[in-house]
Structures are given as C-alpha cells and as structure tokens.
Length: 308
Image 1 (cartoon, rainbow, N blue to C red):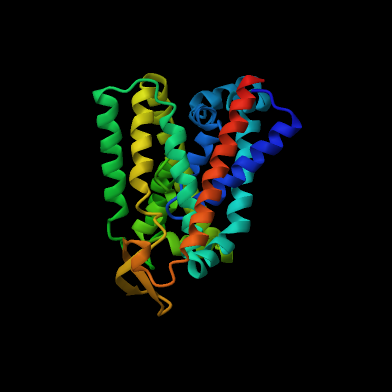
Image 2 (tube, rainbow, N blue to C red):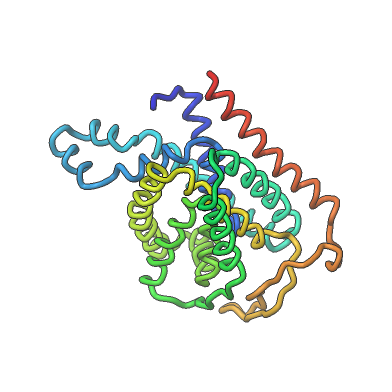
C-alpha cells in the first residue's frame, strides 16, 4: 500500500498508540491496531516474513525483499511502538501507582468502545457466532482472575518464553500482552529493564517476541482469511471478558513482598465503586467518556478514509 508522508506520520502515531496500550496490563495494542484500520495489513505484513523472503533477498536484492514484507509499513509502525514504550513506560508506571482509578477508567472507556466497534464488524449472527463470543468472554474472564506467578528472579529462558507468549496476546485484540507478563510474574522486571537499559534482558525478551510474532501472526491471518466472522466473534468475546481486568475499583485479596522488600498486590477482585473509599467517581466517569470518545473519533476517521 502506497502512503504519503502524512500517511506515514499517522501510521507512526498509531504505532505510538499501540505502544502506549501495550505498556498497560489490561489493554491490547492489537485492539488499537484493529480500531485504527491497520490490523489485517499488520498480520499480512508480519506473516509474509518467511524463508521466501530470504530467497527473494538472494535473487532480487534488498529492495525487492523489503517490498515483499511491506517493510516501510512495519518499520514506521514499530518505530512508533518503540518510541511510545521507551518514552511512556515510566510515566504510565507512575500513574499506575499514584492514580490507578483514573488511569484504568480512561482505558475502560476506550476498551468498552472497542467492544462495540469490533462487534459491528460481525456480518452474520448465528449459533456458532454467539457460542464463540461467549467462549471468548469466558476464557478471557478466567485469565483475568488467575493468580499471578511470583518470579522476581528467573532464567533468561523464562524471559524468552514470556516475550513469545506476550506478543501472541499483544496482537490479539482484547488480551493484553502486558497482562500475560503480569500473570507470569515478569512484568515488573521487564519494565525495570527498559528503564535501566538492561540490554541482555531486553534482547532476550525481544528474541522471544520475534519468534512468537512470526509464528502466531500466520495463524491469525489464516483465521481471518477463512473464518473472519467467527474470528471477530471470538475476539469480541475476548475483549468483553478482559474488561474485568481493567475495572478501575479493585479490592486486594492477597499481597506479596517483592525482591525490594515492598508490599505489592498479588490477587485483586473487582468491587463496586460505592464500596471504595475515595472512589473519584465523577472524574473516573469523565475519563471513561474521554476514552470512549477517542475510539469513536478513530472510527469516524477510518470511515472517512474508506470513503475517499
């Protein structure tokens, strides 16, 4: 797909939005990609990276190989993701500690609008579609109530596997890769590695990401090509089920002491805002509405592009 300079600027910003979402445990960058209209192009571009690419490189050169994998698209998008993760990781971590209700409220509104947006793409409702939606919601909800593993100290192989599993979740609309890292117990260590520029750990996780991305994207592309309606139903269910994770008002059921001697939540349960002291309800609702309107705006922009 040919793009203008303006198009690449917007693509970079979409990458930044994906990166910002992926930093937060509960919000999927895949959801942002879907809403912004680049999801299927992203899957197609990633899945085109294979042994044929090497053959094209040998026979026709770098330019042909680059074009065969939609290199301009991938490089600009990934630059946006990387810029966002590096620049926003510390800020979002700070907000998660200081203003969790307000931050989660914004993302709750964003993801709630995503449910409506992706659900509208389903063209036919029948028993199989509804069943997959319910199953997707059930699986995602179950994942959100699992007790995280505790692994402040882990091998590099563990972080490699963490990266592979997380990227599979990141490109699935609805399930957050960061949340998978939370469940595995590796989220905090990886975030700290980004802050401290721990190149060994970053490279290990990155290698896992590459392996997971190249393999899982092919599966998703095949599902979209052959069972698009059913796949959309399953993804919509995943997003509905994942809303439990980003519900702003939580009650901590169990705590643990991390490697720094700090008490941190281990298992949390969603509760009513009226059972929460200092629930910040009005501001939370306002930010949820803002998050919702962001998706509506992106939807309208994408619709106008299709008409052009």
